[in-house]
Length: 77
Image (cartoon, rainbow, N blue to C red; front, side, top):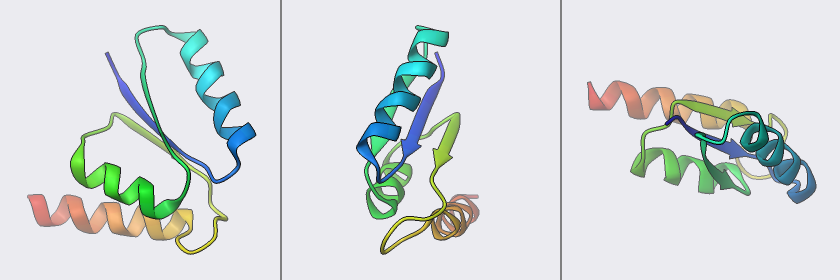
């Protein structure tokens, strides 16, 4: 079972992405974050097979999520 994290500040878009991916393969374990800060916190607590993130979000954007994730993974090695 793959774990997928969707980081998207627009609730409607987040719901559509979760619905499409869930219907495509019922074995996906879907997780959601409504902003970059929440996404980073989830990434630090759990391991994901795939992370899909919006790029333009208030406070912490998708590029900052990517940078934080890379730094976190590097510090764990």
